[in-house]
Image (tube, rainbow, N blue to C red; front, side, top):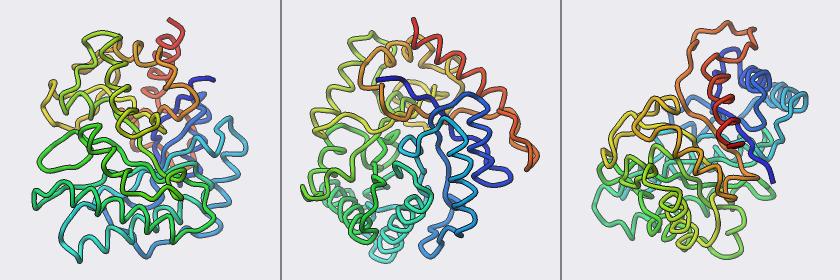
Length: 298
């Protein structure tokens, strides 16, 4: 299996332009938002013509649909004990899956939210219930719903392998193939996992999550960390510019579990104000793609 590098590219002009910019950077994976991420979007659908433009752009690229990840809205707190907020988050996650299915994406990933009452086991069950609702609402979808590990700030869930495993354990066996998890390197480091220590330490982190969840990650977010080890700060910087450093990413890419799944950069862009009809790849994305290619070959 191969490494499939991609990024969450700028979507000025529409998500089909994000796909074109990714393709022009030589990417074979992609991450997008299907709607504005600061809203619940529980009533927002994808317009058919928007889906067609996106699918056409993907068909003209080397990005296979199964290597497209849609990042869910940041406001969805599926862990909350507040019933009103939880219902909106649950319905928002189902709509994320509906939109991702319409776009032909392989997965939708989401931050599971915070156990604001301190009951983390109950929170894990609430998160799983939201996943189950999404999978049962959008029937026939092959798009997976994947939990993303978090940086561990406050009472956020999915910081540890055990919490990721606890969430997935509440999903019935008949639906497990349609869910799973992914790992963000900045979040791992910010929550206390020292990826700089050694290749064995990196393998050990992946081993722990695989053992707890019963499967390997469905995607990776490749981000260096502005915050120090254990800072719980979710601040991404270019690989090599943060506290993790480029060497640890080489160790990560040497692990076979990084092959065959989307490897997505969520690092800064140089030109957020790019013209809507300009499909030029971002210089930082090109720089990161060159670095990742070198690290993977080392």
